Image 1 (cartoon, helix red, strand yellow):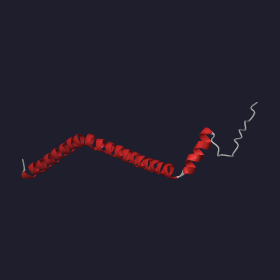
Image 2: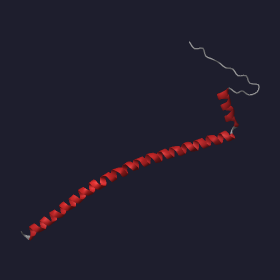
Image 3: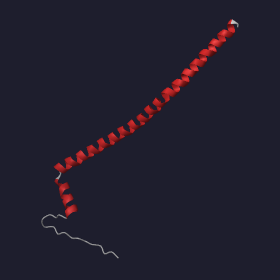
Image 4: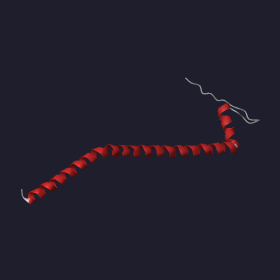
Length: 99
């Protein structure tokens, strides 16, 4: 066996070993990579949901503040929901005839 053939065999062997290591690493790390990717997508969805909920909380707090400070809102709700009228007003209930 010539020294050149042995050297070529040695290089081919190292390439083969590197290829085997790369294939094993691919199959070992691929499931972890896909899991991380899936978890990142779910994390983004949850963060968007949190942002939406924070916005809704802010809107509800604003509504609560208005209810605490604006008596016209209470008046409007009373008129709409229970038919309340101011003193001296007459409530007229118009009913539409259905055929």
